[in-house]
Image 1 (spheres, protein in one colour):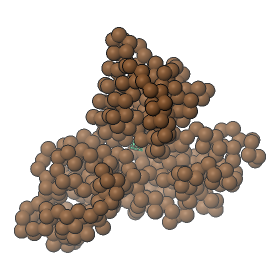
Image 2 (spheres, helix red, strand yellow; image 1 turned 180 degrees about the vertical axis):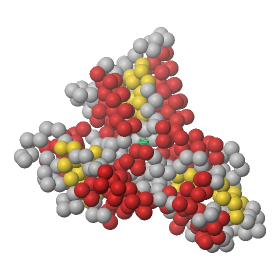
Image 3 (cartoon, helix red, strand yellow; image 1 turned 135 degrees about the horizontal axis):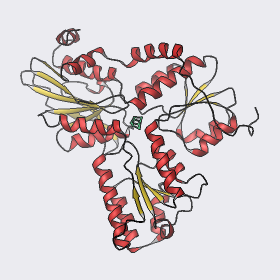
Image 4 (cartoon, protein in one colour; image 1 turned 180 degrees about the horizontal axis):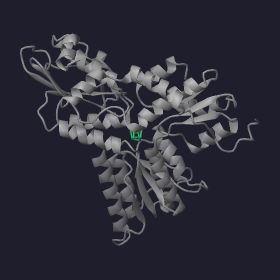
Length: 414
Ligand code: SF4
């Protein structure tokens, strides 16, 4: 097939019953935890001696992540003889990405997508991650004739539908998200509409939103505006704040903090009302936070209603939904964002990611150290964290507190 011949991606369905049976067995072997399931079954609390661990009501793999991993494993099995590539990371968890790499799936780093995809042929398979991919990249993949296994989550595609609708109606999409995040990049590309004439602006912080609201109400320095957003690749090519803030539709990355997203929606709506004499005619909004993100945030709020000495949030440091769980925890108690159980290096020392420094660091906590004292530890994890990592963390806590793994398993009847 010539490069120019393909016009739509050659999407393939790898989910045949025979393949899925094998895949599910493999996925369960890699990521399942009977121990975590047993703790959940007894009310998500495990107390042995002076040590209590409480798990959040909802944590770990969501339906979108489970589907993406199943499809990636299936692609490897179905195309055993072919080169199988992945655009970046399937999800933001290093353990899962390591497993895929060990299976021979080749990750193309985000900064090199165009360059590397341009070298692929119709013999190659490309896996699109759960976050989706930008329209231009999908066109390039099509032009190379590659086979495509598309794992984009349905909830992400719902956001695309919404921003396409905004573009069709002449509304600029204001997207609450991180401009460099794969999902937001994919969504931004759809906000330009089917004809490519639409516009978008990505806002991350309340300070960004206040800056935009001020411009909506009073106008301002156009160059300063463009400097702020185009430098961060947070607006569409040709974006003009004097033209493209007239009619706005708000959407968000699916994994944002709900309370912050709602505040952003409220501030933008008020700015448009103030400018337009109280009218909402130039404003549309649709909350696109996904159910899984919402459930995990709600599950953590529930967990925090009970007294805890410290909270561990397990997951990849670049995972958006996990980061927001850390933010929620930090407001209430000592919270540590750990990648794996190995971050609990001793009773006093924890290696963890500091959201404010944007770096991993080592902290010292006396909470676990006194073995004679009662301690209660909460654990949660984002939608990209497998249960086996939660199991490791749980066992590590008890091991540090002098309770061997066999005793932990016995306590839940395993
Ligand atoms: S976190 Fe939400 S959007 Fe992302 S894969 Fe899971 S369900 Fe889909």
